[in-house]
Each structure stands twice: as structure tokens, then as C-alpha cells.
Image 1 (spheres, rainbow, N blue to C red):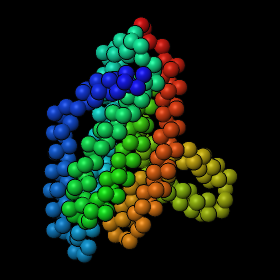
Image 2 (image 1 turned 45 degrees about the horizontal axis):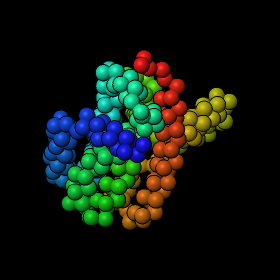
Image 3 (image 1 turned 60 degrees about the vertical axis):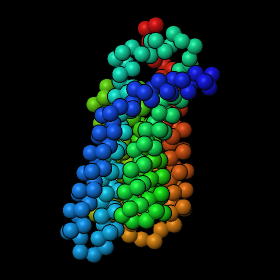
Image 4 (image 1 turned 90 degrees about the horizontal axis):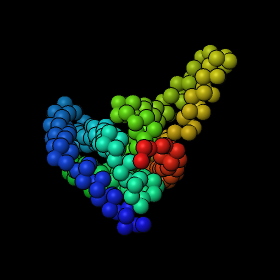
Length: 259
């Protein structure tokens, strides 16, 4: 059974590894270097830290979108080519497809963060480069799993990408949204409408990843315990990854395919 999952993983990996992926990755890295050089000319103080943070964040959001598109496109092609019907005629369980896709996401995210590790290490330090690459891998892994769930449920690339990015940005802005809602309640002197909105958004933010689930840009400017920060992110990502994979399995098993 394990050998079958690995064989399926290799097959799916061949579909996602293409010249287009490497070209896009190279273009993004080159764009980050060129923009970083421009920012370096503008920065007056802490230019090294500013450039490192800019390059790291530029690649963070660029690679997040790239990872989402690659995962969504890969699964959508399985829908369009009726690949699921062929797979289910073989002695393969549906959970093996999810497991194989998870391995593909792991390898894809690793490939994407390798140049980030080298760049951040070059512009800052090896320790920060290692932290950012590892933290970014966890971030991309979590976002890609969310994209996998979205494309399995919605079956359309635009809707899946939009949904995943919306959840991702909401999670990234969770701290700011919480602060704004708290201030709104104070300014409205605790009105029922403000408290209701705060409760609704608080409930939504409670079930999505918080800011501690993502790589911290403060590491470029402050002396932060990298291992402790990475440990918090690892714990949060593991919890949400298991939850998302469980929902993926439930959603995939409930689907009916014409075999």
C-alpha cells in the first residue's frame, strides 16, 4: 500500500514539475534581487535589514500565489482529464490520493524555499536564512493544503485560489482586525451592533490560523529567539494541517465519480 502511494506521488510530481515552474521561479528571484537593489539605494539606515525584509516578503507573497496556482492547476487537470475515474479503477484508496498530493505539496514547497534560503542568508545571516526558509516552508505548506481543500471542494481554479487567498489574508490581518474591532467597541461605547460584529469576526478568527502561524518579519530588525518563534509556528501549522487533511478526506470520500 505504501509503495502504491509512492508510485502515485511520483506520477503526480511529474505533472507538477515543468520548465514553466522553474522559469517562473527564476523570474521571481531575479525580480526580488533587482527590486532589492533599488530599495538598497533608497534606504538611509539599516539598509541591509530593510533589503532582507523586502526580499523575504516579496518572495513570500509571490511564492504563495505560485504554490496555490500549481496545486490548484494540478488537481483541476485531474478533474478535466477524468483522472480520478481511472485512479479509482485501480487498487488505490482515496486517502492514498490525498497522501500523495500532500507529499507533492511538501516537495513543491521545499523547491520554492531553497532560493529564498540562499538569498536571505546572503543579505542577512545564515541563521535568519535558515529560520525564514523553514518558516516559509511551513507557511506555504499550510496555504497549499488550504488550496488543495478548496480545489477538491469547488473544482474551479479561480474560485479555489480566491477562497484560499481570502482565508490567508484574513489570517495575516487577524491581529489588526482584532485591534480595530476592539477600538470600534470603545468608540461606540459598547453598542450592540459593534459587539455583535466583534463576536462574529472573533468567531471566524478563532477557527483560522493566527499571525503566529506565519514567518515573522521582525527577525530582520529585532533580536528574536528564532527557535522559539519557529516552534510556535510549527505547533500551529501541525494542528491546522491535520484539520485540513481530515476535511479533505471527508470531502473527497463523499464525492461520486463515474467509474
